Length: 72
Image 1: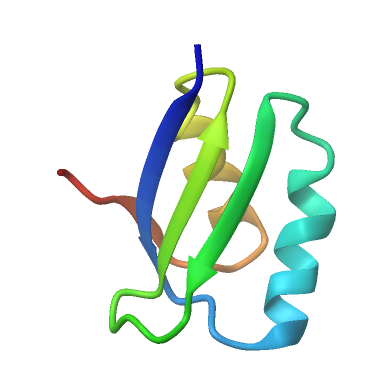
Image 2: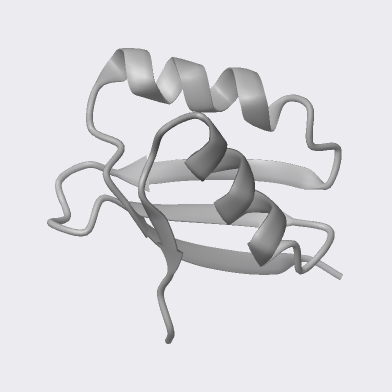
């Protein structure tokens, strides 16, 4: 089963996306992800094999980004 996890972030620049990509490569459960940089909330959508919301928030905060779950 796949989970779609949605977060509000402050990821804006290409180099920031590259940094996130480097970190997400180490999380085996992440299948796909993208950031809508046009949205004011810089929405991060993650397709994951696990419901690992707290892990993703923790990893992003550890590398200096704002990240909180967006409730649907």
